[in-house]
Structures are given as C-alpha cells and as structure tokens.
Length: 379
Ligand SMILES: Cc1cc2nc3c(=O)[nH]c(=O)nc-3n(C[C@H](O)[C@H](O)[C@H](O)COP(=O)(O)OP(=O)(O)OC[C@H]3O[C@@H](n4cnc5c(N)ncnc54)[C@H](O)[C@@H]3O)c2cc1C
Image (cartoon, rainbow, N blue to C red; front, side):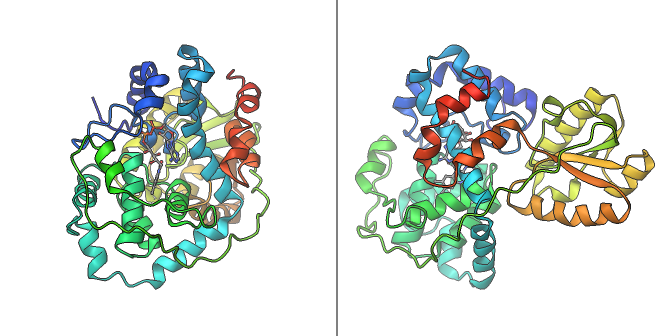
C-alpha cells in the first residue's frame, strides 16, 4: 500500500485503516518517532488533505463515527491546526510575500548545503535530512526538531529552512510550513520558541539518537511584528446558469464531491501549476473522477482555448488560499476576463466557517471546535 496516498481511493482506504488508531492510541503515541520511518502512529494523510483529495470534514466524520469526541479530541485538534494556519495566513498574506522576498535576498552558503545534505554531524538531524530527501515526508515531531536545530543550533536563517521543506515535502503547504517554522523560531507567538532537547529526542526515538551540542539558549531571529489583520478574501461564487469548465488545481482535487449543481461541459487540468510529480498524480486522479462524474471530456492545455472549444463562459475552480496557485489564478482571471470568461472559485464550507476564528491564537479556534462540528453537521 502506498505510504503517502496521492489518489482519492488510496486516501479513503488509508483513512478507513487509520480510524481505529485515531482515538486514545493517537493521543498517547503520536509523538513517538519511528527512526525506521514506518510512522504507523500517525495517519500520513497530509499529502491527500493538503491537495483535498479528501476533505477535513470526511476525515472528521469517519473518526467521530468510531470514537467519542473526548477520546479523539487530540486527533481532531491536529486536523484543525492545518485549518488554523490556513485561516491565519489568509488574514496576513504579507507574511507569505515577506517570506518569499527574504528567500530571494539570502545567499545560501555551504552550511545550508551541508545541512540539507545531512552532513552536520548531528545524528538525528542528519538522519531526518536524509529521510526527507528519500521520502518527501517527516513525522511532525521530527519536523519540529529539525526546524529548531536548523535555527538555534546551526544558526541558519529559518526562511531557508522553510524553503528547503517547501521544495521537498510531499505535503508542502505555504501556511502550515511557513508558519510552523515561524512558530519554532519564536516569531508566531512572540517570545515563545521551540528548543530541541537531546534527552527528549532520545525518549521519542527509542534511544536511537541523543545528539550532543544542541543549543540551550534560543536566539530569536529578527522578524518584523505581524502585519495587521486584513479581511478574508471573498470568493466569487459560481453561477449555475453558465456553461462551465471545471479547472483542477493542486488546491482542490475532489471538486465533484463539493460543487453545487452546475452546467459542466469539460474538465481541464492546470498542468503548469503542478510543482512536482506528486501534484501531477493527484490532479490526474482528480480530473478522471471529475470527467466521469460530469460525463464530459478532460485534458490538459490552454484554459481559455478549452473553454472556448466547449462554449464555456465560466471557469470554476476550488478556492486557492495564499500561495503560488492563488497568485497564478489571479493572472488567469485577467486573461480569461479579456476573452469574456469569468473565473469563479468555490469555497468549501469548512474554510468559510472556520477561518474567521483563525486570526488570533490557536486556542480561539480550538474552543470553537464543538460549535463548528455542529455547524458543519459533523457532531
Ligand atoms: C517545521 C514544520 C513544517 C511543517 N510543514 C508542513 C507542510 O508543509 N505541510 C503540512 O501539511 N504540514 C506541515 N507541518 C505540520 C505537520 O508536521 C504535518 O501536517 C504532519 O506531520 C502530517 O503527517 P500526518 O498526516 O501523519 O499527521 P497526523 O498526525 O496523522 O495528523 C492528521 C492531520 O492533521 C494535520 N496536522 C497534524 N499536525 C499538524 C500541524 N502541526 N500543523 C498543521 N496541520 C497538522 C494534517 O493535515 C495531518 O494530515 C509542519 C510542521 C512543522 C513543525
């Protein structure tokens, strides 16, 4: 079985197998890192959730069908961490553009290259750097140690560490990745850093690693204060009356499960938005399902030409949160509009209801989880 599912069928199968372990077993064992990379204590659903091959609501519904809320609260909270980071970045897009500008400005030197190659001499770090290169995945607790050692022990810029992860992770996500690096570095909750500790690493890896010489005093990197909160971007909802082309991007790969009734004439794949082969696999799977659902043709190519070929005056895609896809869709919106075609984005109910609670600390969102589950008809 695929270790990190990238089709909807594989993700649903992984979910079904994982559900029995999403209760108290997850709460007790989720931070134990198997150095041999099995990671059976966690779901490994992130690559599928990140591309929405499967929705957060589907995961939560399946887990709550088996476990009482108080037994699976820990797992549900982790699912909501993804939502929290997304909703927070949506309200501070300047943190993303600031990070991109910083990455451009830095010259990565030898120390960065040696760290990425897993040649620092810090056993746990080097092991995880190689695991990331080989598999594209790291356990959450390993990510925290790697980001902490990079920032505080090696003294490297967090932005270049975040860029390394963003290029290599199978679940690479602008919000979860950038903001988790900032959280470790002490820039998210001002003054609160995450410091890796040799004894804790030994405890969580069954004694396999106990690195020497880790930093004992975090030096918080310079970072400007959070930009002011801006209103959430409004989605331009699809018009059911218009002949429609459905556009699959890596941001939403199960549109047929959430779109309202539409007059869909064709399905197109935004091939140029794939950052890697993992994206391409997920998008091809999504396009095949969408074409079967709407009984219409699909294929790659220039979006405006495909729309014209099928008489479509509307292109509908999933809402793209802050990141490269949103930036590319803004360009596409201009090109389409020049040809009289509207670009509409479908925003999922999950995001619409949850994001307004994500502008402050995670606790604000966490305390809303029971109400949100009710509003989403999941509890
Ligand atoms: C420095 C750093 C960088 C990270 N970069 C990314 C990234 O680019 N993309 C990404 O998806 N996650 C990122 N994470 C969060 C987290 O590590 C992964 O989501 C998680 O390890 C995925 O494995 P899983 O599916 O087995 O998680 P599980 O433990 O099974 O959790 C279930 C789901 O909850 C969500 N989740 C769990 N933990 C977190 C978390 N801490 N933050 C946000 N969502 C979470 C994920 O969607 C995950 O699939 C990062 C964390 C750190 C510390």
